[in-house]
Amino acid sequence: MFGDSIFAAMSVLLFTIIVLLGAFVAGLVGSLTGLGGGVIIIPLLTLVLGVDIHYAIGASIISVIATSSGSAAAYVKEGITNIRIGMFLEIATTISAIIGAVVTVYINPSYIAIIFGLILLFSAAMMIRKKIDHSDNDTSGRLAVFLKLNGTYPTENGMQNYAVHNVIGGFLMMFVAGIISGLLGIGSGALKVIAMDNIMRIPFKVSTTTSNFMMGVTAAASAIVYLHRGQIDPGIAMPVALGVLTGATVGSKILVKTKTDKLKIIFAVVVAFLALQMIYNGLTGRL
Amino acid sequence: MSKEKNFFADRDIQVILGTLLRVGVIASMTVVFIGGLVYLAFNHSEMVNYSHFDSVKAGFSTVSDIFIGLGHLKGSAIIQFGVLLLIFTPIMRVVFSIFSFLIERDYLYVLIGAFVLCVILFSLSNKLVG
Image 1: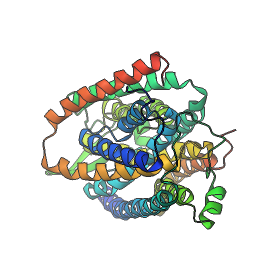
Image 2: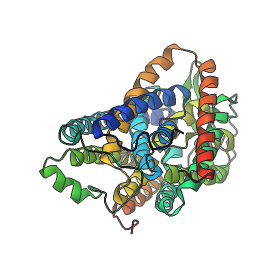
Image 3: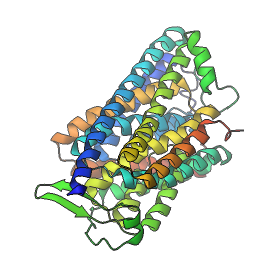
């Protein structure tokens, strides 16, 4: 966006401070919008600071683990994570995340930037779209019964039963989500929502927390591959992880108090702009 | 009735798990923070160069390297140790989930959980990166 010449010579101290502040904002926005910090920190590192996208991916995945594990404790209080759904789908996401993390260095960084931009655009669209709860209690799916995926969750009117549909479809979609997560170092929450809400028709309350449960495990699987390859550089990972986690924690506190509908539209525009920048820089070969 | 009972048993385990996760995140981030201070104290005036990814020049990219660096109290090794703790946090969650399925005698899910754990451990074995 600004070219990397301005920031070509930067001291460790200055770099740390800038990334720390940027990561804080990324964590804050990521938490308010539900997009996650990763999708915002990667454009920041690559477009603004001229960091190689492979380093940005490595740092981002660390922030994904931190935020998802950190917020899990809060989700647990609501007590609606379906560990069986999570564990079963993790078969797909861990394998595919590792595949994604292994192949990512063999792909031209320009293509990665373009894929990233497209996923970012898709996430922005998903963010402002009206969510429709497709859940019901038709427990006729044989695979869901065999895998004991159907469950209950507490509501104001007592326990509510729900049924899981199209297990194979959801599993395949999760495989795609895992590949994207491994390739780009993001949680790919938007794709997980498609798999759980739209394909498997799990109620929101359950899908949100279960997706969060899976995100940490999936990210850990690909993080190990990144670590071994040297993509997790301590000088970047440190300010990114600390900044994003702090931002996300502050964001979750604000979230309880404010209505975010209007905020979401503003952020969607910002995110779409970042996405187009990534695609443009990818197409012109500048990333 | 037994389903409700299961829900609450699950819930207890989840509360413990949630606490464990939070402790894991706080502990690892504290280590990263301390490592960051050490790193900044000794390296603050160096110039950064992250414009091209080079897997050869990467330091502290294996568990053993990180522990060797820790012995020398290197800031970047301390940060990487914190990162390692963070990576193990959700993995511990899988391990505990397997135990909770074992207690519930749900052997199908013990198997599924063990499989997921094996996938992650295979990745940890460092055979995937040439």
